[in-house]
Image (cartoon, rainbow, N blue to C red; front, side, top):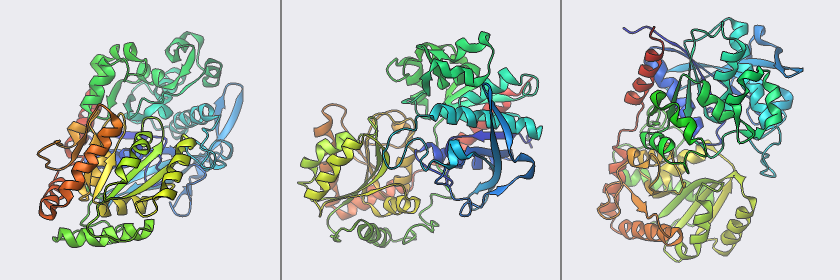
Length: 492
């Protein structure tokens, strides 16, 4: 049996503590899959003001109270608490950074849930968190074999550990996974002083005269991964996708790999999911009927069995596709459909006003609930007949895997890692429908119209939906790929 590795997995959000984007699902499921392989895995995240200590069973660790976290000439204090993440077979210890000013006093993850404005101190918040991870290891005298960072919010961890504590972390290897490059952690260059690094290291943190968290992570990590093979290739070869960091990625070509993000098959399982109204047994129609009625009731629709219910979970950012959907709704709502939208409170608040106006004009066909509710997400994916995925770029397609597993047929914009996640055809559909890449307004409408026509044939529609349910989206092989990377990094 292979030696157990010690792994600290760090992320700005981890389900079930908090979820704002899909990374939270990966940061929950991958550590559990790595633990199943026999490794000693722990995770670490900040405790925002919307995380309940009681609900999440978060408790104190006496030796990690009021730990000092230097930032330039100032010293702040973090209290590191403990909890766990788990599925039905595995549990992983969680470290949680608490600080009143940076996290506990703020109800949002990255932005104010009332105004949707990004917090103006996000740079300081995540510099503080990254430093708290490093200082926790030092205080515990625990230097794991692997520290795994995710996206810009934790990308400074490899740099801070290697530059500030080179002896202590000399045997630790660092992996950075890129889930989304839309944001890189770009802030005024003057903020570099908060890092406390020597001047001769500063060039590795600077990009276009700004402090760039992601560039530093790419420079200092021992290995970089992306959420799919396609995403990795695009980052390496497409200057538009790589967000200006094209040459930085090229410099790490030998230490860069795409691994498709996957599902926790113990949590996303329609046969065992306690969050949905009716579990799947053998009768698809009965399973779908009870779950669809539940979604219909929660959104306030009138139940119409012959009308397809379409789900959409999205924020209002430029890359989410929400604007494209809003532009298409006048045409879409002329069809026999009901559309349920769970809208996360971030992005362009002007788009919300446009959507609200459309809801008011089409109360029988369009409903929106604002916020994020995990139970409702599970219920929508079990109850909706179809689910829209409109991201202009999607590294892996985890949310689409979830819907497909629950018998909600995907209607997707084919981009990024989507082709690796599921087989989709525009004509002979097996388990989903494709949105064309040209005129987005007409393309979204045409894909939905095509799906609605297929829905009229109940027997054929059930076959399409069940095809998706039988796909294998588990972590088994892809978790082994990460385990292999870890072990290769540790070889003498």
